[in-house]
Image 1: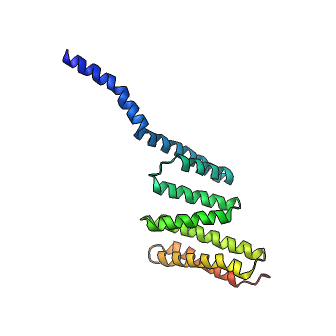
Image 2: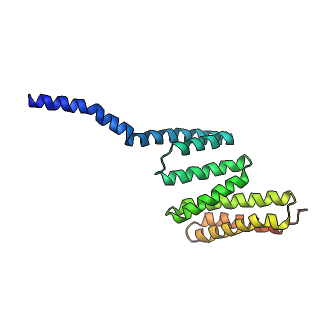
Image 3: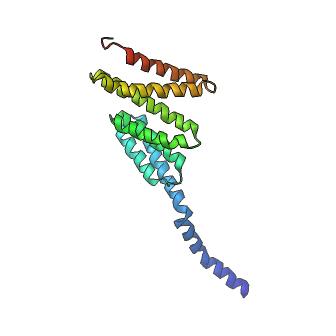
Amino acid sequence: FMKKNLLIFRWALAPVALLAFHFGPGQAGLAREEAKTSIMAALDFEAGEQWQQAIDSYNDALAALPDSETAKRHQLQLARANARTHVGELPEAMLAMENLLNETAKGSDSKLASKVRSSLASAQYYTGWLMRRELAEKKEWKEPLEKARQNFRLLAEQTAKTDAKASGDHQKNLEAVVRLARMDLSE
């Protein structure tokens, strides 16, 4: 009789345990799945060069992803900022990258910090290039180019001993920034 009551009691508690899991740790799993779906959609939109839809999908993924997933959130913020550069939101993208660089530089993920710095330097270079092409004042277009130069130089120095190819790429980008700053507009 006692075993039967124990079995009935356990059977009655099973739905309570399942509900507790569903509304507790299960929510994080559901949120991760929702974020994963949005990330896959964003990557598909990027492949089709549908940048605004990619940005919207990254926003959905960030909204769904739990705050505790810091590293994944940083990667998504970088991807969203990179997509923003393609829709002409260069100043907003640079600001997002600068904020993200401040956050990632404090952390332990130096690879992500390098990716953020590289994207930021490229955005700064293109900002300077566009400003120069639109005949902005010299001091205006020099500022983003100087920041890009500093970032590419730092990246080249950081990767010099560990990754020769990356260091060479950063060195080439550094040289391109310097050439742009010195170039005559007739060229």
